[in-house]
Every structure is written in C-alpha cells, then in structure tokens.
Length: 112
Image (tube, helix red, strand yellow):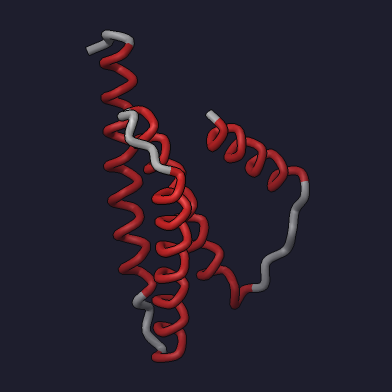
C-alpha cells in the first residue's frame, strides 16, 4: 500500500509543480519514468503474489534505471536511437505486469 501512496503523491505533486525539462533531457526522463513504472507495477505484482522483497525492489529499480540511462547515453554518443530497445522492453514488461495484476484482481473478486 505504501508504494501506491508514494506513486499517487508523486503524480499529484508533479501535476501541481510544473518543472520545465530541457529538451536534451527528455529521453532520459522518459526512460526513468518507464523504469519507475516498471518497478512500481512489478512491486505491486509481487505484493499481490505475496513475494515482495524490498531489497529486490530497490535494487531492481536502481539497476533498471541505470542501465536504461546508459543505453540512452551510449545511443546519444553514437548518434543512433538505441534507447528504443529499452522503451520496448519496459513497455512489454509494463503490459505483462498489468495483465497479471488485472487477472489477480478479477480472481479475488470472482469476476471471471
């Protein structure tokens, strides 16, 4: 429940305080956002499956964000858009986690 409260608080604060983002940082912010959403949904999924591990959650968040940021950085330096690989990977994981969370929720409420 605490991660959900943190996520909602972050969304509300982000909507209240508009912080301009320089254009050169947009890719990095986008990848960081995808990594954060992936970690949040993965944590929610693990929590629903009663397998949540705080150290694994934080470690996964930091590792995913760092690796994705490095992919963007390397791509920028090479002049190619390899950050799209991270976008696709995180996108697939987001939709997989959402599907599993949705199935779990429907099974609990017997809406199948």
